[in-house]
Image 1 (tube, helix red, strand yellow):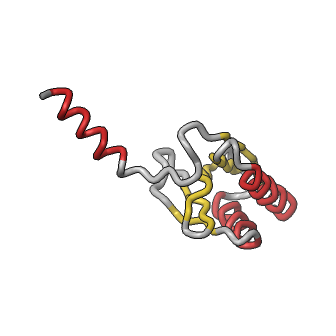
Image 2: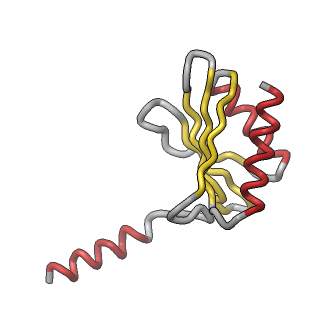
Length: 118
Protein backbone atom coordinates (compact mmCIF):
# COMPACT_ATOMS: atom_id res chain seq x y z
CA UNK A 1 0.00 0.00 0.00
CA UNK A 2 2.84 2.37 0.90
CA UNK A 3 4.55 1.81 -2.45
CA UNK A 4 1.33 2.52 -4.32
CA UNK A 5 0.85 5.84 -2.52
CA UNK A 6 4.44 6.89 -3.17
CA UNK A 7 4.18 5.81 -6.82
CA UNK A 8 0.93 7.68 -7.33
CA UNK A 9 2.40 10.79 -5.70
CA UNK A 10 5.43 10.70 -8.01
CA UNK A 11 3.25 10.33 -11.08
CA UNK A 12 1.06 13.26 -10.05
CA UNK A 13 4.00 15.50 -9.16
CA UNK A 14 5.89 14.58 -12.30
CA UNK A 15 3.08 15.98 -14.43
CA UNK A 16 3.28 19.40 -12.77
CA UNK A 17 6.69 20.44 -14.08
CA UNK A 18 7.04 21.62 -17.67
CA UNK A 19 10.70 21.17 -18.55
CA UNK A 20 10.18 22.45 -22.08
CA UNK A 21 13.21 21.66 -24.23
CA UNK A 22 15.59 22.31 -21.35
CA UNK A 23 15.70 18.74 -20.09
CA UNK A 24 16.89 17.20 -16.85
CA UNK A 25 20.64 17.84 -17.35
CA UNK A 26 20.95 21.22 -19.06
CA UNK A 27 24.08 22.96 -20.23
CA UNK A 28 24.73 26.28 -18.54
CA UNK A 29 26.29 29.45 -19.81
CA UNK A 30 26.96 32.38 -17.48
CA UNK A 31 27.81 35.89 -18.61
CA UNK A 32 28.70 38.98 -16.59
CA UNK A 33 27.54 42.42 -17.70
CA UNK A 34 28.58 45.90 -16.62
CA UNK A 35 25.19 47.26 -15.64
CA UNK A 36 22.28 46.98 -13.27
CA UNK A 37 19.93 43.98 -13.42
CA UNK A 38 17.10 46.01 -14.97
CA UNK A 39 19.44 47.14 -17.78
CA UNK A 40 20.52 43.56 -18.45
CA UNK A 41 16.92 42.35 -18.37
CA UNK A 42 15.91 45.05 -20.84
CA UNK A 43 18.83 44.30 -23.16
CA UNK A 44 18.22 40.55 -23.11
CA UNK A 45 14.52 41.14 -23.82
CA UNK A 46 15.37 43.14 -26.95
CA UNK A 47 18.07 40.65 -28.00
CA UNK A 48 15.58 37.79 -27.62
CA UNK A 49 12.95 39.62 -29.68
CA UNK A 50 15.52 40.14 -32.44
CA UNK A 51 15.70 36.33 -32.66
CA UNK A 52 11.91 35.84 -32.52
CA UNK A 53 12.10 34.70 -28.91
CA UNK A 54 10.75 36.29 -25.77
CA UNK A 55 11.48 36.32 -22.06
CA UNK A 56 8.59 35.30 -19.84
CA UNK A 57 9.01 36.18 -16.17
CA UNK A 58 8.92 33.26 -13.75
CA UNK A 59 9.04 33.05 -9.96
CA UNK A 60 11.76 35.21 -8.37
CA UNK A 61 14.95 33.69 -6.99
CA UNK A 62 15.49 33.51 -3.21
CA UNK A 63 18.48 35.88 -3.48
CA UNK A 64 16.32 38.63 -5.00
CA UNK A 65 17.27 37.86 -8.59
CA UNK A 66 14.81 37.26 -11.38
CA UNK A 67 14.07 34.08 -13.26
CA UNK A 68 12.74 33.92 -16.81
CA UNK A 69 11.73 31.34 -19.37
CA UNK A 70 13.13 31.91 -22.84
CA UNK A 71 10.22 30.99 -25.09
CA UNK A 72 9.96 30.14 -28.77
CA UNK A 73 6.60 29.27 -30.37
CA UNK A 74 4.95 28.87 -26.93
CA UNK A 75 7.62 26.38 -25.82
CA UNK A 76 10.23 26.98 -23.13
CA UNK A 77 13.64 26.50 -24.75
CA UNK A 78 15.84 27.84 -21.94
CA UNK A 79 15.78 29.24 -18.42
CA UNK A 80 17.48 32.50 -17.58
CA UNK A 81 18.45 33.74 -14.12
CA UNK A 82 19.51 37.38 -13.74
CA UNK A 83 21.11 38.46 -10.46
CA UNK A 84 23.23 41.29 -9.15
CA UNK A 85 26.81 40.02 -8.97
CA UNK A 86 28.66 43.01 -7.56
CA UNK A 87 28.11 46.74 -7.19
CA UNK A 88 28.46 47.36 -10.93
CA UNK A 89 28.01 43.90 -12.42
CA UNK A 90 25.09 41.62 -13.13
CA UNK A 91 25.23 37.92 -13.96
CA UNK A 92 22.91 36.09 -16.32
CA UNK A 93 22.90 32.30 -16.30
CA UNK A 94 21.23 30.39 -19.12
CA UNK A 95 20.14 26.74 -18.83
CA UNK A 96 19.35 24.91 -22.08
CA UNK A 97 19.33 21.54 -23.81
CA UNK A 98 22.92 20.38 -24.41
CA UNK A 99 21.95 18.83 -27.76
CA UNK A 100 20.34 21.98 -29.17
CA UNK A 101 22.95 23.86 -31.18
CA UNK A 102 20.36 26.39 -32.34
CA UNK A 103 19.52 27.38 -28.76
CA UNK A 104 23.18 27.61 -27.83
CA UNK A 105 23.77 29.88 -30.84
CA UNK A 106 20.82 32.09 -29.88
CA UNK A 107 22.03 32.37 -26.29
CA UNK A 108 25.55 33.25 -27.44
CA UNK A 109 24.19 35.87 -29.85
CA UNK A 110 22.04 37.42 -27.09
CA UNK A 111 25.03 37.58 -24.74
CA UNK A 112 27.26 39.11 -27.43
CA UNK A 113 24.64 41.74 -28.32
CA UNK A 114 24.22 42.82 -24.70
CA UNK A 115 27.94 42.81 -23.95
CA UNK A 116 28.49 45.33 -26.74
CA UNK A 117 25.53 47.54 -25.84
CA UNK A 118 26.04 47.70 -22.06
